[in-house]
Image 1 (spheres, rainbow, N blue to C red):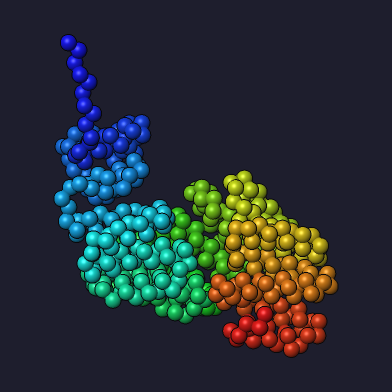
Image 2 (image 1 turned 60 degrees about the horizontal axis):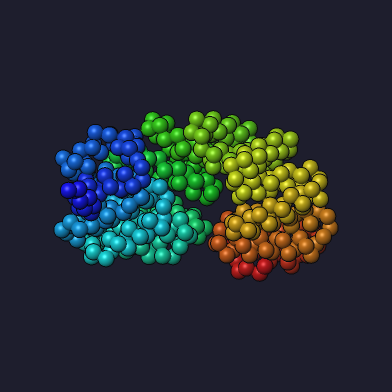
Length: 435
């Protein structure tokens, strides 16, 4: 008599679920283990011989494309444990910039009624997602709520990160003095409580250096960037080191040391070549092009801008290709070729409008306005400048608004339109928008 086929059993234990999900994806135990775990560890988990830590389970779940709930969903876990699971999952999502997953995990944790302290930690993670989406007001609200429930001594790491996040929220609003205060509070907490997180320390210093520079506190900016660079170099934080070199370059540029700025940008680019970080490499090439235009080194500027544009197009980065094209337009305008500048900047502006990058679009419109003005096409120049001002006002980027309004005021004054020029200078100083 033929035997009946065995009944397919639904996986019940955590180990059985890991094995079933792995086989469903056609992965070997070694592939599932990756670099963080080992094949032997995965084998023991599947056999039920060991129970993975929460962090290890998060790695396994992420690699298998499943939420942690799939593996522990029918176990009699306390609400506290479930909140902890979701918080760790949200932290992992922050690390990979998966903001929708961050929100989903935080929402799931909130449904299990977290303690006040856990709620504060979850809100800190939610703030990261909100800042990434430019939801500045909500981020401010949640930072304040989290700071009200966390203990600066027991939760110094979280509190420092909240001050760091608040600093970026203030930067979004152009409130640089308040941003500096927040970054300084984060730095002081890290130092006072001896938080052993070199990445956090160096990133706080990097952000603080940038706000010092934008407040024209150049000497302090340079010292802070150099501290960030020293820390990043000791801990092999190449990205922070590269950004520190970029900050030093920008500070030297502010001091008028354009050759020093180019040298610092070159050092940043050298680090980025080791990292193969295309996004930062493009940023450095664009910055070098921009500084070279300001130095009057137009051939050098065109070379950097062309390299940036070609590299961006090769990797499908339309935004940076358009930003590089704006630098090419600036170089053409500086060389007296207003017609070529207008063509390039107009094309760049159209690309940036399609991808809704208002800040870079405003930069392109600024060149469009200057090119129209150089060609004597004043109504078109007015339209471009005023649209650029409208865009940076909408995103509350006050520094860019001041720069564009000041440049436009000079054009108006040169035409003899004194009253309109005065209005623009008032706008540049922070007055009401009369654009």
